[in-house]
Image 1 (cartoon, rainbow, N blue to C red):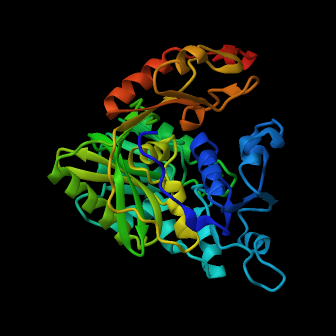
Image 2 (cartoon, rainbow, N blue to C red):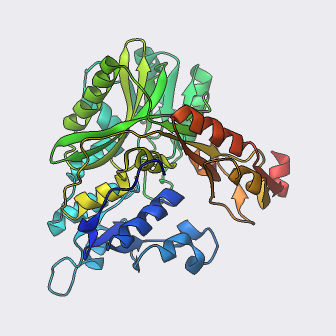
Length: 434
């Protein structure tokens, strides 16, 4: 760790309920850190197998990281409320939240009903439903032209409006699921046929089958990590976003902090703050993805939660402030002391994807990777797991993570460590045919 972790003594004696959870190491680490400072954590979940993938719950990292697990339908607001309400009708928790894209709205609704701190549920929903964000931003120069199509017949009109290339995506999903670039009518029809058939989210919630089309904007993409407190948005800094690129847009690595000129930084921060103000987001973390184009910054998405893929670790190790813990401070009504944000050194993460589809037999090269100076090897697959079932961020099998005197040196070491890893699989019959 580059910078010592800030003191979070306000957690002592408080209790938070979390509606579902993110699975990777940084979020489990955040749970342990919060509990070490005295926070009691209840996990509300509708399906433990979502986390265990057939393995035993008691051996899962989350089982040891929370104080209580409550099995409840986390898509049912009344059920969530009942799970945290006592016989006297009062909440049994000091805060309630979620970092899961699929549950941030219901968590905000529950917190509002219970009179607990939280964001306006309408602002969270506007951010999560990507076409609503486009509508909310209107004709500002950092918005992107778009069309929401609900039938095959609307595709030609969308082409006349947007032209090629364009991005096709589900209006409400996460982990880059279904996102792709289309360059001609044949690709657009193919994307439409696939995406319009998605009638349930990855967590089982019903979907309309509408498809969001956006003008493709060329440029370097970054994300801005923020915490909005009582309407003012504090900025931790800017994270690089390395992508595999066309036709799908899957993240493969990040570094922090990205240096910008004063003018570039001021313009970027203004875009992010104005975006959050436009949707009425006044409370909580946000991970806003923005692309730098020849005509200025363009907002790709605003995600009202903490970032994934070890980005919270990047921020924490460079600034000493944990976005996860600061978000929970807000959840219990405390005010995180974020300013001034000071950057010390840099950090990088490389997301690891297997080269072959199949059932994992073993991982070679772990010792060599872990021996690279400053590197942590964080794997989240086990023998017997199925690899490369979809081409989106869910195919990531782990991370190599590194801190250093600057982000580029850390990146070089994380990349070096990743090069040692080899995921040995046994091809299933259907894998061999593909």
